[in-house]
Amino acid sequence: QVQLVESGGGLVQAGGSLRLSCAASGRIFSINVMGWYRQAPGKQRELVATITSGGSTNYADSVKGRFTISRDNAKKTVYLQMNSLKPEDTAGYYCNVQAVRADYWGQGTQVTVSS
Image (cartoon, rainbow, N blue to C red):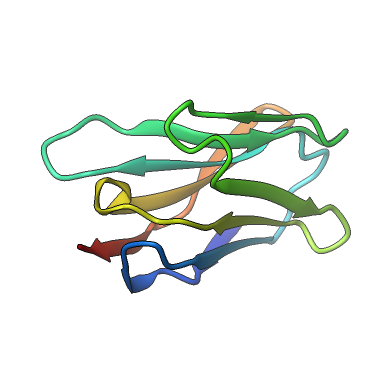
């Protein structure tokens, strides 16, 4: 049974920072891409950032320069450092892990940015 446990969400004022974590546990092998997606009420889920096993990163244009994704392969954990947060960053943030023949999602953590 594979489980992704997310943490770090919360309420923050505009301009503030949060750090999200997502740890994978269970029988999960050969993790390739790890990433974060978000979904605001009434909107489709969208990519925030991804990172490959080799460290290559990809960011949505809306978060470039403000968010940083990183990972610890030994701990099977992916992080998302979010700085200069804006009210439009308010959403549920979901961790995604792509492994061999499998694709896993976390339960989501809420990020709310007040103006």
